[in-house]
Structures are given as C-alpha cells and as structure tokens.
Image (cartoon, rainbow, N blue to C red):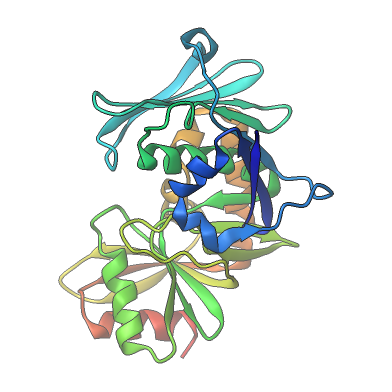
Length: 296
C-alpha cells in the first residue's frame, strides 16, 4: 500500500510517495518542520516516487559531471538524456542511491526504500538534488551559505567550506541584539515579484537548524579570512563572481539549468547589494558587517 507525504519548502509543494514512503520519511527527520497535510487539489512542483527497483540500463545517460560526496564518503554522478536527468551516489559499504528525474513531468523515481537498509545521507542529498531541479523552474535555488536574520531581514554569508561562515554568523548572534540563525548550509533563495526572499530548508550542514520561515534578503556578504577587518561593495562581474560559485555547482554543466541560475542571480543583483568582507573571527567584524549592510 502506498503512503504519501507532502512538504512545503520555499513556498513550493513537494510530494514524496511510494510503498515505503514512511520508511523514507524516517531517514529525513529534518523535513518534519516542513510537513503539511496531503492535499490532492494542490499540484506539487515535484513528485518523488520511492522504493523502486532501478536497473542499470535505466541510468544510461551522457555524463554531465562526477563529484565527491564527502558526507557519505562516496562518489556521485549527474547525467542527462533527451528526456530525463540521472543522479547516483555510490560507495563500497552502502546501498547506492539511484534517481531518475523526468524533465517534462517533474517526476523523480528513486530506489531508496526498495531495500530496508539505506544510507540516510545519500537520501537527503538525492532529495536536495531532485527538489533543486524542480525548484529551478520556479525562480528558486539552493545557495551554499549561512543566513542570519536581523531586523526581520535576512543576510546571507557566502564562502568556501572552512572560510568561517558559521563562525561569523555565531559572532552576529553573540554580539548583535536579536540576531538569529535561519540556516547554516543550504537555504533557498527565491525571486518573488522581483524581490529576493530567503527560506529555511531541511539541509543545514552540521548545525541542526530546520526552520520553515522566510524573510526578505537584505544583503549578501562573501567572506574571506584576513589579518584585518575591511568590507567593500561588489558590482558587475565581481558580484557575479561572488554569488555564482555558491549556487549548485553541478547545474553549471547543463545549459538549461545554468540559464535558470543566471536569471536568479541577475534578479538578485538588481534587488540587493553584495559585499566582500575580509575579516578576523572577532566581534568587530560582526559589527562592521552589520553596520554596513544596514547603513549605520
């Protein structure tokens, strides 16, 4: 008997169902704050069918990119045919994850749940990928960042892993009155009527911060470590170079997906300011970025 779960992520309805959808849901507990009642009258942006046996031949596609998945100590592959995308994650110790995404129907078929044992980190990443593909059609993208909320607006901090995004947002919470964390790894950015809105998500890295909340985006700040604190406004190519690397990297290998990311990026640059903060891990850096983005 099939079971069904609906979620609202970035104001988009996601539907997960299949003979073992409840087993799948148990592996993605971070989705619970986003769960809503099933409503047959509401069309989801993507339907993810789980518990299916996917044969090797069904995964044949032109490879767009291969990558390391560090959390699961595994390798991943993203491919494309004329009708669908394919996505796989494998290592030597876990059941592999295979996912087929039909581009015309926005239906994704996943093998997780076919067997009772699976790697939850594979499932979370596969769902992130499927939802990201669908959301890109709705002016929405996951952004690798840490997001603080202050004065009822969101400030998005970008940087390579290890740069200090989480440290800097912690410094905001410790030194800026009322500052709270929205997400610490992969919030969603959506363009709504020309305005950039940031949403919490079920993916927050090592910090369990799963909030079904949204806020207008005040500013984007790219961080880099330095022996001093200094901040400057970025424009044009420099602004593009600051934001684009934090968008889903695999999408850059597909022309259609890349165009959607560029559209989101362009709308964001029109709406909000982007900055580069060279900083030390201290309270002065937090006050400098706060005062700059709020014009104090």
